[in-house]
Length: 276
Image (cartoon, rainbow, N blue to C red):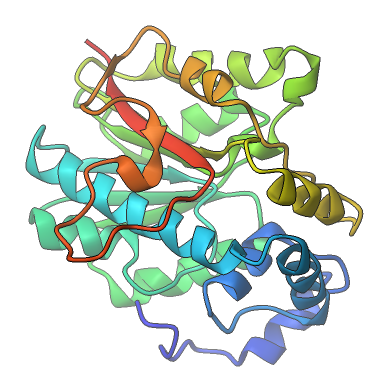
């Protein structure tokens, strides 16, 4: 869906229903991607990060391209036809339901998020997509049991499902304290997935001092904190699953599209792994 799409409301109308004085990660991310669905507090937080890590917009775009490559791979090679995007964020160009639908007809994509503005936009998506192909529900990854109950109602868990956790686990728990909270959440998701399903993750790594400083600055804005992890901590989320080639790697190295240009390296790691 293009950022120039027309919804049945003006963006300004949404401000009356949400607190736009505190930065929200979905809107800040939308700002970095060049979207239109953000407010002064989001832009100020985004700019504060960019001053410390000038490559933030490029990092956001690289994450988006990585998601597109993963969805195309899952729809084409293992033949996944059901996708659940947890922490979906605001719509932008080349949304998951569009990528999956183009790769393989008959895909069903469900979006989940705990941000009410994201859910408002998700409802608008349904007016432009076949009802059988796209759905959404409000859920919080901090309550995986309730999230999975809604997922089972929206998708057929007798068949494989691709569960996408893209730059969302940084909001769960704190890797400096053993990371048990996030590991427990992901373990519950892995246990619930039917055989043949894929868990897909990407997370910011703590390998760039400038980006670490930017994330520290972001936490000072009042927005929901995001914690970077060591690459080994990111890979640990897929323990017990079979990684697809080339494994859990920097995202710019994961099955890059043919191009005469080398993809810019970014401190984000990710990959996909299947439950056998």
